[in-house]
Image 1 (tube, protein in one colour):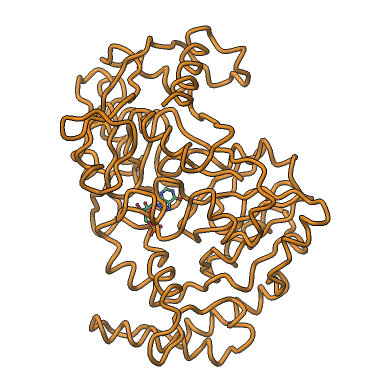
Image 2: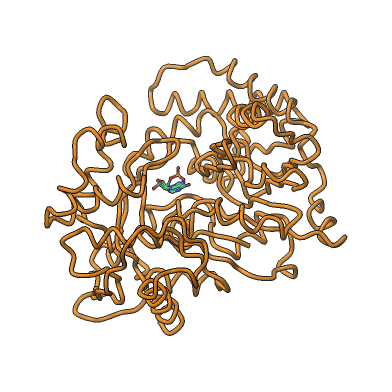
Length: 445
Ligand code: IMP
């Protein structure tokens, strides 16, 4: 089991690529097209959303569990791109027939209601809400992949009916819904060979000795219950949920691998205690122009000089510089990621709720950038101050998260270009010491 233990974009796919050879199957248990992982092998670069990592490993089976919500047309596009890269997924990709189909009204609703949260506008929240709603008066709400194959007419009525209901509710004009419904039904039939009709499929493979790696989408702090509610995604992202949405019993659990980043990032709105520039950064990153993200990488590269920002003495500007240096922009949405100090309170908290056995800390080399700044050392958050009290957990409410203040400790700068170092023992002594200090703090916190 491998999950992100911050706000997503921790570099999970990269870790998976390194450990994939130990497994036979990579399985997803949550999320949908809101996920995005870019995999680079040699000169090949693929941006995946719904297909699990591991496509570059020819013998690896890929499983999409019942906990996922799927945009079928986007999935077909993704498969086409994979095929264009000369990769074969026939007999390798299996999708649970219990996975929920994202319907056009979900996307419509997300565009209307998801703005404040800063969702990816893929219909994720409304699809999970409808999954829980099950059926509402006349129409089925939770349309599953198997339902589309079993009864295309029911699927057609469901998709059209739900859409018309939404359009009427929000007084919008109707937009080719018959065609859209047809495309979804056709897509399900094109995918038919990959759709797995046996809910015990994964169980059978594991009982025959195969090893599964569950790949979490999004991250622990975006969990629909345990995260920074309401600024979260709508699925369960934490480790325990893999044994619901991943279609395997918890008796097979072996270990939990967490992935974190040495300089944190977050996309979308919501509390981010250690953010450089706080609310200014949150607002700046959410800004749009003509309905599109304003501060893209191209914009920032054109507008700013990294060295000036690094020396500006302004934390908000420092965040911009670190984003530019770390190339922290959404792969699909192009949104600038909000940047923050490594928050050990949040990291320790999330290691606990997920029972993390092993932790990967990505982008440690980026910490060397602090040496070029006005900061007196590398800042790490080692405590929170909330209403005059020092606490060492992430508060359970939005207000608590908004009001918590970082207690920062500075560590000696690390120097030089560490980006090519692949081994802990080859790191300069001060970097080894810093990593060791982080490890020790996470154990005792
Ligand atoms: P949704 O999942 O599209 O509903 O978005 C809800 C929140 O989760 C927003 O703040 C998104 O930016 C965030 N989010 C969703 N998917 C990802 C991801 O893959 N990486 C990072 N943040 C994500």
